[in-house]
Length: 270
Image (cartoon, rainbow, N blue to C red; front, side, top):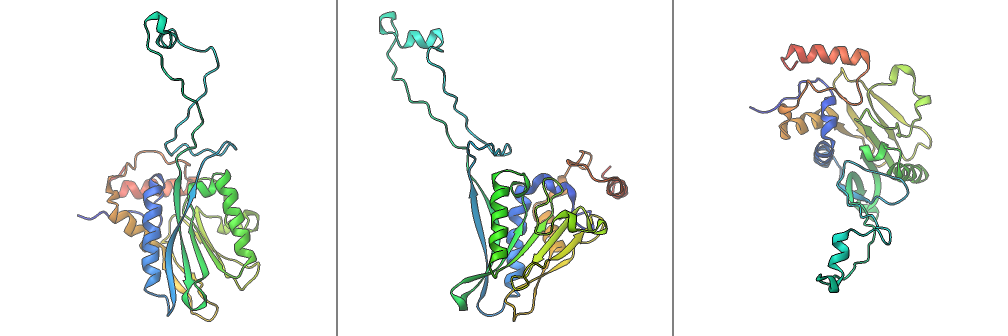
């Protein structure tokens, strides 16, 4: 029996498995869009690589290697004996101790390119990740990308299905009415409309909508069915084994928490 998402919209428990979900919905989104693109337009999944450095940016959910240089003279008795041939030990070459960078990790996004205009990027679609929102170096890099997109003529679609971290989409939270400050949201900037952006509220208790994806200014919009992406990722990942008794982090707001509790009780998950 296939796994079926028990939530009508976004399932907040999938946020725990964002590595898998993120990769999956990017691939499924590419497939959805490819069937709608006219003529010379192509949707491609691209990747960027992040490396941790000494500036204070940390990613503790990825494996890392730390090598700490020992102070001169801070040598164990066993090491001292091993390096003293007269004491019966065998001389061991002392290595140079260096610091190793943390393991790199990749993050995907979608570009739509126009083959008739030199493979020019016309639209970028970002499914935001924890790295984008953690306030560190990758957040700074993402902010820079936003500025570059605003300065150019390409369109930017930002989809935020993570409740944790900073709000970093183009529309500042102070510009969003209280009625639209929902658990999730999306933002669409059309490259030919200057400082204007289309904001989508994505409340937990409702089905995720179809987003209008801008292409060239003369093209009709493509549509991206967000709910179909989440449901497919849930089904193909077989997430029917999720522990719904485990508390969410960050916790839901009071209204969403009460609604979620009743939903899960109704299907025997609590």
